[in-house]
Length: 160
Image (cartoon, rainbow, N blue to C red):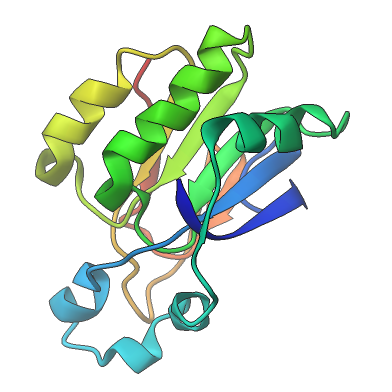
């Protein structure tokens, strides 16, 4: 899977300590919808990080070598633009007996990514955070993730 980076221990994006995979691509949908220049994106700097290719087995090894991590979070840019690669990583985990949660942060609305959600729902323990970043919105606490989200239109849902 092409990634902009891996954070071995993330305590910000989910209620459990997580391996954080920084996805490689974005279509800047949040910026377009908000009539905002992409330079205003909170994740813009990630786009300029080098892109690296990680095999699903290497990602799994990174996860398993850290006793503290209990979930995988995929975000940073737009992970659903890499749905096939993402499914390959999840399959590697499931095929090797790792049933821990995968949390996918997407800026899309649920109805925009029905096909991707259908693919993901075939795996156990998948959570998706939906909704675009909207500047100057009041944040809200999300019960599913156990964290504060930055825009009040965002929410997480257990899809399988």
